[in-house]
Amino acid sequence: MVKHHDLWNAINLYKIAMKKFLSLLLVSMLGGALTLGVYKYAFEKEVTVVENKENQPKFVTASYNPTTLQNEENVSFTEAASKTVHAVVHVKNKTVSRGPSNIMEYFYGSGGQPRAHVGTGSGVIISPDGYIVTNNHVIANATELQVTLNNNRSYRAELVGTDPETDIALIKIEADKDLPYLAFGDSDYTKIGEWVLAVGNPFNLTSTVTAGIISAKARDLDETDGKFQSFIQTDAAVNPGNSGGALVNTNGDLIGINTAITSQTGSYIGYSFAVPSNIAKKVVEDIMEFGNVQMGTLGIKGQDLAVVNGRLEDINESQGILIAEVFKKSGAYKAGLRRGDIIKQIDNIKISKFSDLTGYLRSKRPNDEVQLSILRDDEAISVPVTLINNSSYIYSIDEIGISLQEQTKSDREFYNNQDGLVISSSNEYNTRLGINGKLLVGINDDKIKNINDAKKAVEKAKSYGMMSLVIMDENGNKERLVYRN
Image (cartoon, rainbow, N blue to C red; front, side, top):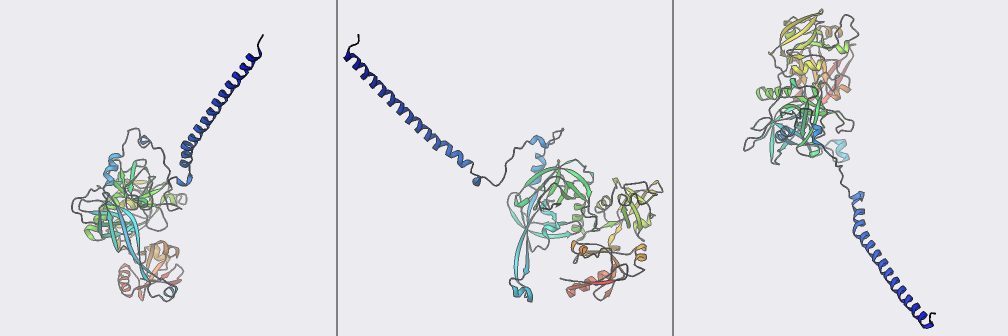
């Protein structure tokens, strides 16, 4: 039997044990809470800061796998890129314009204050002594040109010459040592699907290299302007600032000068265009040797068969150039070419459309001989043709952006034997005025009958600071357009 005092001692021992247990439990709970608090403060707070959207960089990083740029032959771009970036320069164009600074100057024309504008683009060094090819629109109206090399050294550049028709310009810098440069490749032998690199300075980001393939050749962006451009089209990314930069193949050969993009936003959306190297090289050589561009031409009017296909029952061909008319005294006339002949090939170049032909001819000069392969009444004929200078029947008034052409026999019939020159093409502004295809019959007070009349009248008009054109349509209706310097 348990005694009373023994029971009491047992109860006291139990109470003491429970107090110790509760004390340990409370200490454990406080320790856990403290540990959890430290963790929350030290670690979870840092994670929250990292995910703060306002502190994120304004660009997106992406994984990049170099092997995606190589085909089955393991082509490497590194050598071509390393050679090209040192020969591509950053071009700054400073222009000064005058504009009204207040409402009174706007209405009464006191001239306004001069304002400086800076444009940027790219250029390619093509000789160790500092000749640089770029786009005409990069340096247009420049009062000062500055070139920065890939090593960040800057030089003042001088304009050597330009050709607005091909959008090519040549500038030069004087350096104290030989410069890295690129050799011209042969753009006639580039192939659709061939890998290329575009190197330039988009958005002022120096020495930027992008890769792509040649998507098309002899591309004409505006077939209505009468200029018949002939660009290399690529899907290498080109943006504002890339203009005048290099398009090279995987050997590092210069095969084009990056010139244009087609975009509704002003930035790259998948297409870019380059002046073929053979055209750029010929323009540069002409500027250096003659001071202007020497254009060789066949002396024909023609049309793409793709355009007339289906409207002419006696023609089964769908590719080539149908000769519509041959100019007298031209190389084509002397070689015996006729209306209705179809040009299929020039030298070793296949001719599918007019831009194929004009693109190749832009790399030729007057008096060069070319070999034409033509179809005449379904018979294949090879004909040598000596090119003539197109200034003998084509004349461009660069000051106002129009090109004039001597009338052919069919033109004279169309205009009822009226004297004058046909406006064959013009810039965007004049094209909107609807003057293309009309007849220029007067400049200021001078009547215009031929190219020589136009040249003399333009020289006189330059001293006046104003040029007034009298233009006539096929119905004899005349209008006058006034251009001021």
